[in-house]
Each structure stands twice: as C-alpha cells, then as structure tokens.
Length: 321
Image (cartoon, rainbow, N blue to C red; front, top):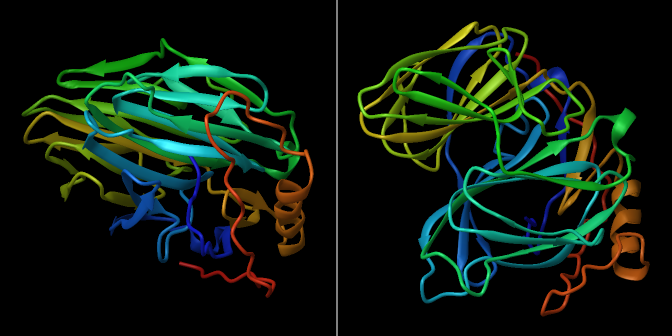
C-alpha cells in the first residue's frame, strides 16, 4: 500500500533516542488519511512522538468497510525503496501486482510480503468481483543498511504457523513467538503476530525483554496489560517485558508488533526509506524520469506521480528516555 499523502513530510526515524527502555502503557491515537476515493485508513505509525516499534516503521488500519457497491481499494502503481511491505487482511481480498511480474490475490490471514530492496513498484486493488467487507492492516518494515539494497522479491504464504492457548490463537506473521517461526523472510530480529481472542479469554503471551512492543486493536473489546484498547488504536508497551497479560470482553482481534530497537537513523518520505535527503531526492527523480523501479503491467490506469519533495534537508533529532 502506498502513502498517498500529496504533501508528504520528511521524517527522521529510528535510533535509540526514542526507545523506552522499560515497560510503559502509551496509547497512540490514529491520524485519519484518505486512500484513494473509497478507502480511509487510520495511520498509527509514524505517530507524533512515536516513529517506530522495532523495525516496524509504518502502520495503517482500515475497515471494516462495506464495499459491496464500491470499487474498494484502488492504489495505482507506485514505488518503494528500503523497506518491506506486509499486507494483512481480516476480511476481503487484495489483488497485488508488481514490477517483478507477481500477480497474487491476498486473502484473510495470508501473508503478502514484498521486499523492495533497492527498488520495486506495485499496485493494490480490490478484485472486480469482491467480498462485501474489506478490513485489514498495511505495515512497513525498515531494512537495515546491510540489506537495504537487496534484490526485490515477493512472497505469498497461505498457511502460517499458529500458537494456541485457551481462548487464544496467535498466527505468526513474521519472526518467532514461543518457539514457532513464520516462513516470511526477515532482516532484523522482529515479531508480528495476529491474535484472535475469544470472549472471556485471559492469557499471557511470552515476550523478549530486549524487544520493544506495541499492540494494534483490529476488532472487539480487549484489554492489554489492563488498558482497554479500542479498534483502530495502538498501545505502545516499551521494552523490558517477559510476558503480556491479555483479556477479552468479546471476541477480539489484535496484532502484536515488536522487535529489537532499530539503531540506525532513517529518513522516510512518501514511499521511500533512505539515509539522507539526497538519497530520497534521487529516488523521487528516478521514479519520475527513469525505469529504475520497473513497470507494473496489467493495471487499468496510470501510475501514481510523486508529490513535491520539501527542499530543506532534515536534521536528525532524538530524545533519550
């Protein structure tokens, strides 16, 4: 999924200055962003004061939207650099096309994982014949310096491993949880898991105290470490935890996101992650003027032009807590 903001701002993210080294309960409220004509998303990352969680650098939650009489998601071809995109659905389908020639329909609780590396472009759309409801999340993972120029590739995993406890089923999206590992390729120590809680369930998830964590609420009524988390909001949890208490008042869906704090400072703008203003500027020029990002074939429309890039170089800023 693209960041369609036509006035996209440069952001310096990463570095340990923003990492909280102890357990906290920091509730993040979303920013509402229009994605095309018929889809509105709730943007949780980057957020004011909270730019990343581990290597997770971008989180959008959307739906459930009734698209029975609507075109649904329509995101034209656009570029990515220096990141991985994670497509995750609870309802509906998304048709993925990319400049490698990949053509896949992603369905609920299947992993669509696109590693952009040095350069890729793709489009996302609801199929012409689609389900009534569309509900999911789109997330980005920042690639570390050693792997950010890797050859682009796309993975589609339809059968993911799970971890179960009374009233809880955790589906592994990326990384490892309780000795179970996702088949998705990762480049940093990371965890992404979909948590399905039954009404009345109480459970404790094992965590790595060296990771920082956040929980995104997708649906239902649940408490995370005693804090009610409503759908479309995210609770940042900091580091230093060995377990996470969960309780559900109704059937509920959550996403656990975490990882080793991302040490490198990155510059994120539009759909690019780089290390300097000049690198971002060159990527924008390449998308507009060259074939570096390839061509998405089969999409019935024009590709997305890049917005104007702010002319002033961004200076890194951080804080220690």
